[in-house]
Length: 176
Image 1: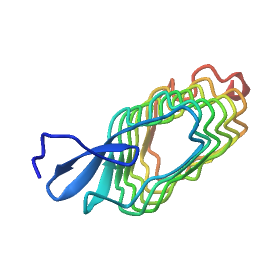
Image 2: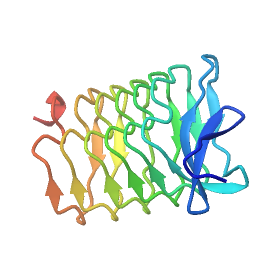
Image 3: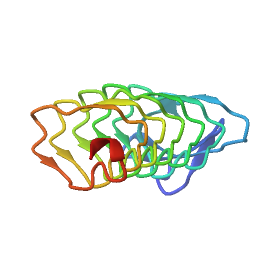
């Protein structure tokens, strides 16, 4: 397979890089509300959800990510305004910048202990997010990570976190 050519299978577009499938884009048909990302595309394990792969998929309510995925790209689920439930497996180590930004109906999310990097603005404008537990594997909380999370009431930050940006909780009056 040529790594520069995008392939498609069902509603997924992907490329093959170093023997692994990188999920480029989900072809949202406007009425899909639950997505089970397949662990294999084109005979290759899915290891990366690329930048903006599900951006603006406004009808999505639930997404299950397979154990084969180790990285979620920047803005991967940005503006998935109906997203309520997402399952992140223990195989994921990196969550990109603004990955869940503007997921306004997301109420809670479990960040697995395998995650070592949560990007800048990852949960910005997740207005319904109530509780978050940062795993011990994380050492920094970047700018705007929880910006404008109006309903955020409980945040558990472990002792492993040695740096918190002064704007990490920007526009959250409940923390001032």
